[in-house]
Structures are given as structure tokens and as C-alpha cells.
Image 1 (cartoon, rainbow, N blue to C red):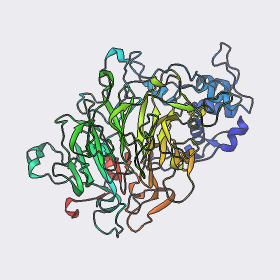
Image 2: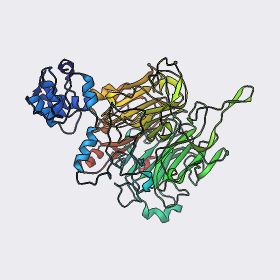
Image 3: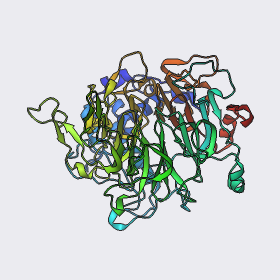
Image 4: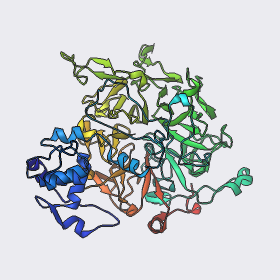
Length: 636
């Protein structure tokens, strides 16, 4: 084992606000290993640092299992391993099979020794559990932002006892609110339509703090209640959206961007573009909003009661209002067909170009809209002829639950498996999803963590162009299919936690901050047909906290206040600054965000949104370096 570990000991360069020379230079393990190297190996193997150091010091003879038994340890290495409560290993399999607990959850549990048993959710993942056994999920699934209506935003809303709910805020942390910034032009008539020089003040080519639109006379009476410079807790746009929605920490929604189909639901009606964040109103009244998503020409928001409202184009039923009208001019409530009272609380939403996917607090998926590529996940497209040269599809005008999940016979390890044959995932009707994200015509979803030792799985369906579904082939999937590459001992302590999709690419963020990429977001280059680790970040010890994909861009931000982007950005959406390059084949630092803690990212069509942390003096100092836009500079 030592012969495997020693050659891989590397000193990884890291951008950080704070660094220690001794941490990276003082040799504490065989082969010239430093404390930084031990920490890096600990993170990748899912073991305590003391256990890794003990194995390194064992000289290849392995570490005894006496930490479990009654016999006393007889060597310094064994003592260290016992103190770390880690079983020894003489091969990689022992390392992975014994690393059964999530180290982050374990440390969290240690901090809460005084908490009552059963009140807190403790994630346990193991590579040795029976995959076909019933899974005990951590519920409820929560919105991405804290509910402003709750007096204590750090606690989950109480649920009925029969729902077996617990406090899941540690498992599903809320986005930290921050200041709203954007890169990419505010002229929404440009992306994908017009090529011109980016010379105006509102042609943002670097991350810039946005002002709110000046309130109209009709809003004058509410002006006192509107914060001049609010913190935002949620940002929403997508790879096909030239418009955006942002929600403040108090639950007020603002929209801006392209509005030709009235996809922002503004009372002024359709117009070419809404240049600055403008307050949105709808049937939710005074209830705060906790979720939002945007498609090409429609938008959906979620209020604190768990109801969803949609507006904009409805030609394919993507608004899900149980009506076939082409245009929804004002926000209308979405309809969930057959949903029980326990499953009617919507907590998350994501939109593709012409379809929408909802997620409830019970982790159930509902979809509506276009069925052409299998986006609905109901197992069919319903293709039929409208005319001799025109096809129609069985689109859904209301949201229906999708509870069937499949895997290939090969992935299920069935003997004499037929290539391409699918079977149902065991207990598929009970699968709980915690994260969803839609690309142009596909969806990727991550299973909720469990307390039963099961590793969360990843599912994908819809259009399979460029391998964006991660199954190694360019084929559409009409039913949510298990992504088999993202399983195994490697993911025991580093399991998937969040999904993110670009136009024709997908990303999965893991517990320890690694990002796995599949598909293609640039017009040139090879497609990535199966999930592949973005090693430019992982190998340099960057812990990714948020990632997003746009029409031709990908962004990642890290715990060390580093943001990187790559792809193509003709309208400044990569954020490299005016006069600098507008494309990059490899991850490149967004220097204008250096030292800024970005808590969330959303990539749109021709623009990118950021939430920049503003909690202390250090954050304020970093924010001062960002460009600021004034209302007077926007002359659209």
C-alpha cells in the first residue's frame, strides 16, 4: 500500500486567503510527505489524517485491526490507527470498505453531543450495504434558500409525525445570502441575435454589482418596504434563458432580461428587454418566495407555502397550469395531478427550454411540458403525425409524478445481460431525490442521502446529445436512468450531493467538493461521454462549493474564494474583463472575483449571475474591488 501512496504524494498549489509555510514544507511522513499531503490523501480516501499517517509509517506491513478488538496495540503506527478509529488495510479495498461514515457528518455529530438522539440527521454511507435493501432517507427535502417566514431560519418547518421527518438543515444547507452581481450584457436583445461591439456601460464584461430598477409610481406606496441594497438568497437563470430572477433574503422577487413573451410576468406587459432587476408581483400576495427557475420563454416561482406559479410561453404546456393556451400573461398556479396532501409542498424547480421539473419536500419528481426527447421522464415521447411532414408529441399540460427509475442490465450485473436492455431499479417507487437541474432538453437528478448506509445515486434522462446523460452513448433516455459510473467505494465518503446542467452538459458536485463533468459545452473539442473528474480543480486541492453551466460556459467557485470559468462568452459572460479573451478551453481564474466568497452561481444565455458574500469586514473589503453599475448608466 505504501508503494501506491508514496508516488502520489504531491504538494498541491492552492489559492487561499491564509496559508502556512510549515504546513506545506515540513516533512512528517515517508516519501517527503507534508501535513498538506496527508490532508489531501485523507480527503480523497475518506479516512482520518492519523489513519493515513499510520499506514504511511507502517513500512508496507499494514496496520493491525486491534482498534476493534481487545488486544492492546504493539506499535506506534497501530496506536495512531486505533486513536483514529480506522480499520487497517493492506490493500485499497480495505481502505474503502472500512470508510463507511461521512467524515463531515461525523464531525458535525460530534459537535452536537448534547442534542437529543433522533432529532438530527446523520448521513451514513458504506460500500458494503445491500443495494437492493430499503433506504432510509433524510427528509424533508428543503428549498435552496431559507424560508423568511420562519422565525428560526436554521430549523426545518415541523412536519406530521407519520412523514418521519427530521431536522435536515445540516444535510441540505441553505445558500448563504449575498450581493447580486452579473457579467454579460444587460441588453437582452443581443445574445444569439446581434453581433456588435461591447462598448456600452451596461455591456458588463466583468462581475459587476447590480442596482435595482427605480420604483414606478404604482410602487411608491411600497417603496418604504423595499430595501435599497438588499441581500439576495437565490438567483435563477438557465442555459436557454436570456432573463433572470433573483429573490431577496426576505422573499421578494426581482426579474430582468428578455421579456418578449412576458416571461417575467410584469404588469407592463411584453417588451423587448427589462434592463434592471424589477420587482415581481403575483397571486402569492404577501407570502415570501423561496424558489424560482427560468426557461427560454417562461418562468416559475415557489412561495413559502409550497405552491408554484408560472408565467410566459405555454405552447408545449411547460407552465403546467392544466391549460393548452399558448401564452400565460400573468402568474398562474401550477397544477399537480394526483398529488396527496403530504406530497403537495414544492421546494425546488428547474426549467429546460420548453419543459419544467418540480421537486417536493418528499423528494418526488413532477414534470410538465415538451416530450420530444423524453424530457418528461415518463417513458415515452408520444410521437405522432400532425401532417405528412410534421410531428407532434404527447406533451403534458399539468405536472405529473415520475416514479419509475431504470438501469441497464449490464449496470445491474445481471448474468447474460443484453446490451441496451433496461430493468427497473429495485424499490424505484420509493426513491427520494434531493437535487434537480435541467439543461436545454435533459435533466439530471441526485438521490437524497440516507441513514441506512446507501451511497446516493445519480439519474439522468432526456436528450443525450454529446453524452450529457453520462451513459457513454449519444442516445435519448425516456425514463430516469441510473448513471452507473458514479458509484462504488470511491464515493463512500465523497458521495454526490448536487446536480447542475448546462445546455448540453451536466455536472455533479460531491460532498468533498469534487466536480464530475459529462457532455460538451464548447462547439469545438471532444465530448465527454461519461462522468469525468475536473482534475484541474481536484488536483490543486480546490474544494468546489458551487458549479453551473450555461449555453456555452461552465463556472465553479471554491471554498478558498476562487472562481474559475471556461467556454465561450461573446457577450462577456465569462467575466474576464473588457479587452481580454472571450473564450478559454481550460478553467481560467476570474481575476475580478479574486478574494470574493461567491456563495452561488447561475449561468444563463449570454450572462452569468453571482451571489457574493457580505458578512464581515473581509467580505466588505473584497466587495469594494468589484465594479458597480449605477442606474443612470443603463440607457436601454
